[in-house]
Image (tube, rainbow, N blue to C red; front, side):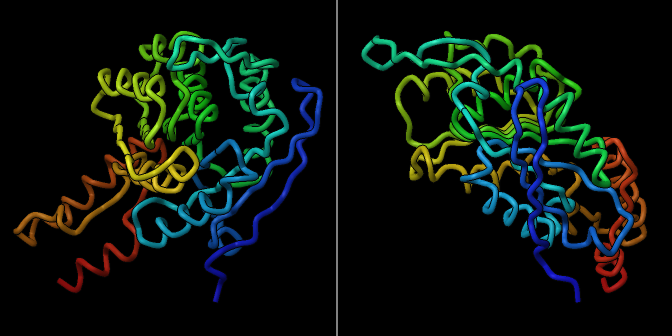
Length: 285
């Protein structure tokens, strides 16, 4: 019997763009070794703090048939303030003062690393699908939203946990019109007034494929686990099949299943066939 949790792999990727070696942690699906299947990819920042729980959430949700199996790629930080901020700026406080953020503004170079070095390396090494998701927390959440705005075709799903959207006079909020029809999930914990104000501004611009959520019983650090869990469910909601979707007439079940997976295939950009458990459940009804 195959292990339910595959061992994580640690890679060193030399970045010419950043002029440094970057450590990347990769979790392959449990079925990877025993199949020729290709998989969507979840990329996340702050891997040294958040990789294990995120990879475990992805594995659990796939076993529960809520999301497809994923390759999870976590980027370990060297200088998160530099890499995850799109511009050089200071952070305003609730009292109107500004807190300097020395070394900030390296986001464009980090974007280039992700787009031109990391994603091609992961695609070269592993059996990937073209459907990618980016997840980030705090500065990482800011970066996730901003990178999707800058490179609309790179990621089809965005998960942002307590994102610092008020960075540089709401820079990312002002560029929301650049976001393509992505599946966006953003959540916030009990945060500072300026962070909550920016989150509410995002919520006010919400589209049909976006979901925003408040976790007022979480703090800035604990928000990651529930937000990434709920975010994965939201991003892959068009993939998820529920038996409650079936019409009352059994004669229409086959057509309903075919229609669902045709829509799921169109959403993901590759053919998705009804899994065995769906066919077995229908046969037993």
